[in-house]
Image (tube, rainbow, N blue to C red; front, side, top):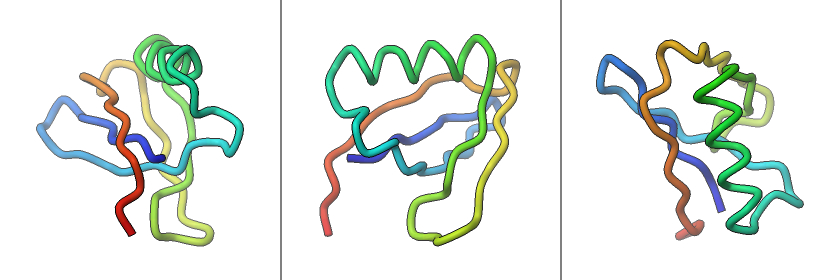
Length: 68
């Protein structure tokens, strides 16, 4: 499971979700937190690259099953 953060400029970034945050209520909590306060998450496919998100740039967060 991963999250896709949709930004104000139309770009997206795929993020790694914490291992124990996969339920629907966890996803709602992550979405709400990012849209209200922003946050720092690991970029999907990277061992140590992180992205800092600011609440005023996050338009939406969607969640997807890993396909690999």
